[in-house]
Structure formats: C-alpha cells, structure tokens
Length: 511
Image (tube, rainbow, N blue to C red):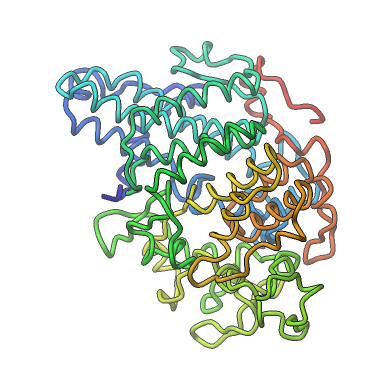
C-alpha cells in the first residue's frame, strides 16, 4: 500500500534521529534514541524507514517543489523568485557562492538526508528479531534513496563529498570532495544492491526493483553508456510490470495516482482530510489561483507552448492546422494537460493567466476539482510528485538505443507508444523525416521536452547534452532580460558557508 507520510510527526522523528545541536553536526546524525530503547523491533525499523522517506519533504527538491527546476531551464519563469530558491536572479546571471536559495538548499537538504540514510544503515542490523532477508529489503529501500540523492548532488555540483558511512566526529566530516566518477560508481553499487533485494512488483509507495532499475537507467544514460542503458531499459520494458497509463493528465492528480501502472517512484503525500497524514499543499503553490491572488509560481514560456506540435504531427511552422490567433486549437493534447492557455477560465470565471507574467499558467499537477483554493486549504492537496515513470523509460530507451545503434524499429516503436497513448493519440514519428541518428536524436530530445514538461527534468537534460549555454540565452524573462548561462554554470557553486566550515572543500571552477 502507499506510504502515507505524516509530515509533522515524521519530521520530528528525523530531527531526533539526525540531531541538530550544532551546525557542524548537520551531516553527522546522533544516536539519541538508539541505545536501549530503539532498534529492537520491526516497528522501530518501520518508524526509522518512515523517517528516511520523510527526507523527501514538500519544499525540498525531492518533493512537489521540484518542478521549480524547470524555471532554471526553458520551461517557465519563476514569478516568486525569492520564494522559489532565488531562481529569478540565478537565471539572469546572479549566481555565486553567497547566492541564497537554490545551492544552499540543495546542499543542506541532500546531506541531511544522506546522514539519515547512513544512520539507518548503520543501525538496522541491531534488530535481530527481524530476519536478515527482510532487513536486506529495508536496506535496499534506503540505499535506493541514497542513490537518488547522491545522483542529484553530482548533477548539480560535479565532484561532491562522499560519505559512505556517517562521520564519527565533526573533523571527520571535513573532507575533500570525491571525483564524480567515484560517486557515480558508489551510486550504482547502491542501485545494484537495491535491484537484487527489492521485490519485482508494481509501485505502491515503497521503492521496488523497477524504481532502482529505472534510476540506474538514468545514471547510465547521463554517463552516455548507451548500450548498457538501452539494455537495462529493455529489461524493464520486457518485464511487463509497468506500462503507460491511459490518462496522461491523471498521472499528476491524486485521483489517478493510486495503483497507477506508469508511476515507478514518487514522493507520496496524503491530505489530512482523508487520513492521518499531512503534507503541504501542491495545487495552490504550484499552479496558482486567481481567487486568492497567487497567480502562478511557474509562468510557462510561450517558447514551450510553441514546441508542441499540431494534431497532424507537424510543427506550428509547417502545419496548416495552426491558428496564430487561437494557438490552443488543433494542438498535441499534452499541451492542455500541461499548460492552462488563455482560452480557458478558472472555475470562478477569471481567465487563465490573468496574474501570470507570461499570460499562461501551469496546469500539470493542478487539480481544478479542488477549487476554490485558499490559504486555509493548502494542507489538503495531496498530489504525489512523480520522480520516475514508465514513459521516461521508453524515452531513455529510445535515446540510448539510437545513440548506440542508430534508428531502428524499436526506437520508433517506443516513441510511438508514448505519442499514441489513449487521450493523446498523436501520429507516429515520421520515419522518413527522422531517418538518421542525428535527426532522430533531435526529435527524441523534442519528445522529452514535451512529454516531461514542467516535471523538473529539462534543466538536467540541457546540461547533460551540453546545450544549455546555447538554448537558454535565446530566451528572455517577461521583463525582457536575456537569460544567462555560461560554461561555469554547468555546475553550481558550493555555498560559501560550507567552504568556510570545511577548508578541504574546493570551490567549483569559475566561482
């Protein structure tokens, strides 16, 4: 069944488990409740495991705030920039070791989470009352989470500090970062363990084998290990445990997420009106609502809108179906499931985009059946944030297979499955127009942008393809300021506070 996170109580548990009495110990959890009274029963393990999952809390980059990362790319403008990790200033070039928001948050949240995972792994074997095979399954869940967080760290910073176990003292924590390749090797070790020990079942709130396999495909893809990535993705495809959901829109709404066959891993929340669990709201914060004036935290760029094809499978530049005055007509249905266009009103009658600086709103993850929204109802929105889904496995397979072998039927078939799902029904990929590795590469990248829009992946895609410095400066903010992305921006700067505390931590180049 789903893991329902009681955010407030579990956060308290994490603080107890991890400690927090000194700034230097942020990454060194204390064993405040372990001696004598804890790590005795399966219930103790379950409580500690819930604490591990609770590190994926709402306002972290592992919760519903993750789509804000698309505002670092060409997905949209971060209207509430200071609230959303200072993204507004970062994308216009103000990124340095003292810039608040994104970098300090990523660093702090990630290493606190890793400390929690390492504490769990160091203590679980004390519970001898639980047989070893069950303990190994619990360990596998936590090692999957550790791999998830470390993978983010290397994608943000490159070389990072690698704590395979919890440092015993503050001085032991003050170490130099490890090469990215070494961290990636450790990530794959964790994932291999998870793949071996986790059950091969559909996803229900706990990490399963498919979760670990899918994340490893992503790691291999980012490493450009094309044959290995394609082979592992094919194993998932042939395994038959996961498949595309029939309703694209409901992948991102609470009403369609329970037992959804496409979701392979997510951060799970539950409204307190439905059960005992609590999570901060998603709809009001992400999508915005005119009825209480938030507008939109992410204002999608029209450049993203223009990327969607018409229903004949042609670009807006080539299709006779495109109407410049009514750009929402005859478009890929995923557009209306992702972006709320000006032709649609909110439930109370206000036009979509009325308070958006780009004139359009984010629709994905926004459940209008919950309207009218209000501050008092923020805690009642329970959409899970989806980290990994089967459509991405198909996209990664297509990319890796094309890079390894060039176009073949299996690549086109994977793309056609996504485009042809019920409710989307877009035409198959044009095999003639995209018949070479290079042209098909561009089309796969296009399809990734459309299928995964506003899900927090585009920033990493642009960086791993090493085209962010080309794509992003072509865009302007609603205020007419060009986006800035220089070579040094492929890595974030380490926060100056961390450099000051750890003299062995070397700043990234250019900062």
